[in-house]
Length: 395
Image 1 (spheres, rainbow, N blue to C red):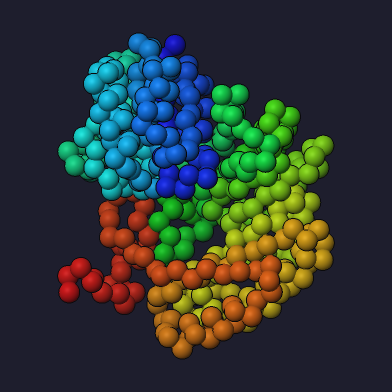
Image 2 (image 1 turned 90 degrees about the horizontal axis):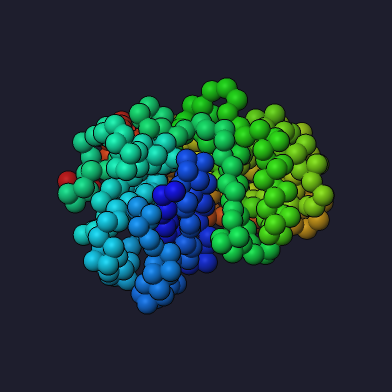
């Protein structure tokens, strides 16, 4: 059986990565022995070398580096140089949801996007005389960047419903940890600023309730895990989805806790959903409000009247602080720099945000428009001039 080592690379040393565990599980289903090494930036060079010596054999075919973004440092580069010299047969593969921004002499292949399908295709090409990888014309330094971050990509892993991650004893999961749960991979909406690769999703593409229950029970029985960060871009996109997993939680013999992204306007429009979220103990909420300027909201695809949003936020807060065993917390994420939003409008918004209850916080971030033509660029990225923006790089 082929073997590989997968290193989670993140500037946040306290965060256990999720993507590589999903990749490792998918590789095992395809007859690869894959081991994840987490918290990589906390390892010294000598520790990384000792680990490699204890794991690498002639059956080890590649070393993978998974990034939440694309973080790199001199220790990792030096480690790769030593690996290449000590084990010259190894291939180095880097994967991320972000286009690579670091330079390495040793990475052989870069992958951009969800990588389950494209990685298997690449490995078959490298080690089993599989078909050549379809080139995209994008490169970083002198290496091809393989794209799988678009639903139309030949290697797309979008809208998968088999999203199980089976952890292993050698992952050293601890009872107090927060793991990541993926209920669906896609979004039914298409906000103008968003470059998530799987927008305008149609139909039912969620994980089966039975698979969800099985994974929850296994993680609890083996490791004692109860708490989860939800990876879905919009968990509460439909009432059916919420109710499905509330029914699944009813089958558990322990009380879990979930935290993740939701649309407040949907929760305001469908107040009955609060009951099922409470059944799930889904009490950590992040609401993408973006703006309280009505025209700006309509422009980006969020047209609920700001006064209704304000009232609704307080109604949601009242419900969950009354019924949620004092565990409810929420963050309102806002964007500065949207079309038709001016200084006065932003100042009014901030004054309202600063008066929120203590269980509700907010984050204000500037709008970032990335000019690129790979993957799934946002409407703003494709038509920034149409929305009144100017190119600062050319001024």
